[in-house]
Image (cartoon, rainbow, N blue to C red):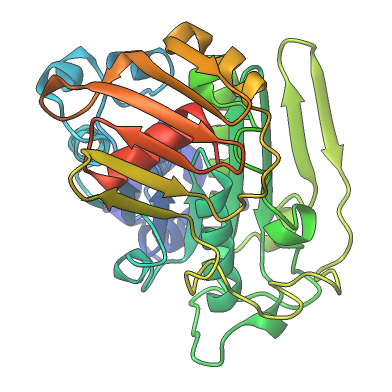
Length: 373
């Protein structure tokens, strides 16, 4: 009889589960999870997977810890706010104190088509801690082209959604060699099978405009984490192939049956078109020379943004007015470099000029936070 691994003793209660056991725990120790976005969802996922013993966790996030994060982002505290620590690094420090036997890689970066190659080699599962569809479609392209599992999740207001994506092998690049594989029968629809196109900018609410209930976040993050553990321990048939939708305020929980994968008209997993990965569908952020401003041009600009609706959501965050051509105003709660007032000019096609900064990544954050992508 094989002697138990004493290094795994801390996971004893988890290994009592018949579908995990010591063999499953060893698989977790050898696994590599990529968490993109370390805000509300990402920090809860990172905490759970660290305690579960996933051997390598890579976190990518471009933002700093702010006091308004503390209501729901469980890895951070007031000292992180006072020290202006990036979320990825603050998370790494907390996770190292929780479990010193695993490796946590923290990267303060904007995850994009330009930067993603730095972080995806050797990854076994991708977990979504994002707040925008543009980057989600990039994660979906990466997952499908490389044959990597992708666990989608989103939470805003009192609602949340999640689904597990095991991409169909037919769209996988011939150069891809994932460590974890599944059959065509076990595959699921990809994100673009369900949402072929991103909602136009300004039409989707964000946490900064309508708020978010903390328990929604932790519930969706727990659902994502459980799916990742099932995948990494080889329990593929235990993964839910439905989409979960919850609303804690109206007490509704729905699970939507999804068609077999891939949907024949899906541009990603049926036709292997990866325009988000290749950068063809990415928004553009350009610093305007001599103007102390950055112009954001979203990929989904279509000329039909409801500026009055956006102004209504921005009402609590500053003074904004709408003309027949644009929305313009100044934030009361945001400042740019050197404490400069941050101004927003938003056009009906979704294009925006954010004045008071010359940093494209910061401007993209402000756009995603208050306009939405």
